[in-house]
Amino acid sequence: MAIEIVIGANGLVGKAIISVLQSQGKIALGFSRSYRSPYKFDLLNPDFKIFSDYKVKTAYITAAVTGMQDCENNPGESHKINVENTKKLIDYLNKNKIYIVFFSSSQVFDGNIKNPNENSLTNPKNIYGKQKIEIENYLLRKNIPSSIIRVTKVLGDKPAGLFKEWFSSLEKGSSIYPAGYINLSPVIAGDLANVSIQLANERKEGVWNFSSKTELSYFDAVKLLADIKGYEKKLIHKKKIQGVDISNKYIQKYTFLDTSKLENVLSYEIKSAEQTLEEIFRNDYWN
Image (cartoon, rainbow, N blue to C red; front, top):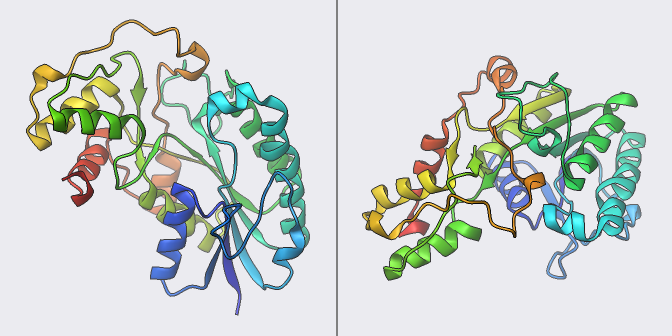
């Protein structure tokens, strides 16, 4: 029986894909560099023989150095993982007739174009975006059967990152200072998993945008959290001036993408940023 594999299964998106595949009754194996993983695979030092024991139908490539600052600080290592060895992985999968789902990023755009579609001019401002577009072009140039998903900010059910810090501070009655000049157009990891699996099942090749249909500033997002949880809004102070710790190369003026292609082809209803965040904030993990 053919199986599905997720490469990078220990991450937020990888875990969500494994969960959805298993809920659909499919055999799904998750490969990760984590020492806890029973199926170890490290893109820094890949050993493709690990896949030879399985009859693989589809491979979801979520493994990557995803921290934009990490890519800037370690351009050589991140290029080896995100580009050089990812190309080798793609070649191996293609040689063995395994369909590929590759997770790209909205960072392939500079954020100056409102609502870009799949054919809009790419112009990445940072190393991470440049590495993603290099793999996109590799897949398209070699005409490798694959679905390429350009995705925006991915959030899980549980509080994480800055939202976890802000949530914790508001719970304690402490003031927070979310940025009013940085926007997000988030998607839920489970929704991304469903979309990617549908694209794979239907063998929908090419590039696909996936984001919320609107965007919010982080300041407005936290105000929504306060509305839902009943926190005092006087604790929330808008950070108006860009700090020296955040470079313009990481900030996009416009963060949401044109998702009409995905909506029309998959008959998928795209949520607004407000709907996405409300669904997350009302989750039991946020109580």
